[in-house]
Length: 418
Image 1 (tube, rainbow, N blue to C red):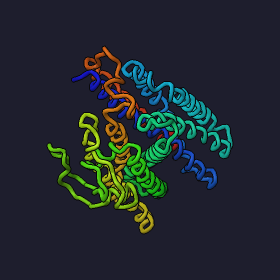
Image 2 (cartoon, rainbow, N blue to C red):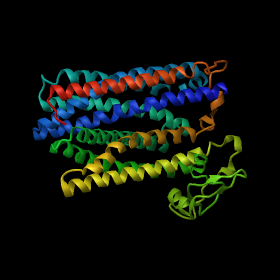
Image 3 (cartoon, rainbow, N blue to C red):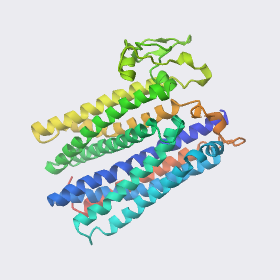
Image 4 (cartoon, helix red, strand yellow):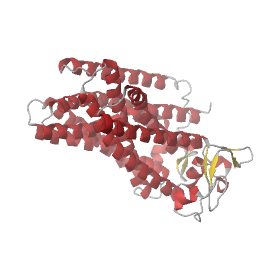
């Protein structure tokens, strides 16, 4: 394997693990704020207890995030020095700002945890808000860097705004779906008839319903933006073989050995309508780019899977709200679906970042720096390429174990029956 390819695989593996920790570190504090506000205003001790569980999870994830983020920073410094040299004058300050945002999150989380029994509910709620601000701030600064890599016309572009908002709302949605899965699993595990966890699922489902609409709208707008700023990425995602108006949307299918798109379900003109709001809109195809400058068309399959997951999550949310409205609970058979479906949001986030990164290849910085030139020369990572993924598996396992132990301790300490 070529060393630069091995470096990409190593970084991809590392980011694949880190993004899950980052996702939860953003989503959990916001949900913590929402439920604590409810507990404070309604004087609801059971919701306050649930907030304390979220607080324990947030603390574990901050520690995991420090370890994971440090490893990735080291990989950037050692393996991708030419990239940093090229990018630093444009976006170097955002690496520093991300650190400050993370510091805000960590400091206020510490204050939040140790002041729980000494402060009024209203003041304690206010202390929790900077935790979310810091967590989202970290995501914003890192996403600014990625948006610039995708569209380096300027640091602040429409790509920047759309990538930030789409990513952050997707993280919160994925976290919400995961917690729905956790609560569903606890109901099945304990066979409880307690109404509170059913209420939690409903409330989380309502939050998810708002988020899925926002994410869908932002996702569509991102596709419109990509059509003008990253046309090759869109062409690869939709396997559009040639530039054309009335461009078709193809579900499934492939590019054959002659470079022609074939197979799948073809919806004539739909891609032009989605990208330019008119069948007359011209969408640029893969024929405008040399073969060695095109991303892998595997992104088309990844996108199709992503859209299937969006449909599944939407159906899941609708089912949660309907069942609660009609029955005030989720049927047992549906709880199995929501339990298994809890990981669907995480998969959605992973697929989104794979589309973003693979769809930009072979560029590290679109139009400015090829990925092969962004890799540090004379460094062979093939022999250590297995070490970091193994370390991340250990970190991920340890994080899961810590979350499990803190949850068990919470249940015992607060006499939780579900």
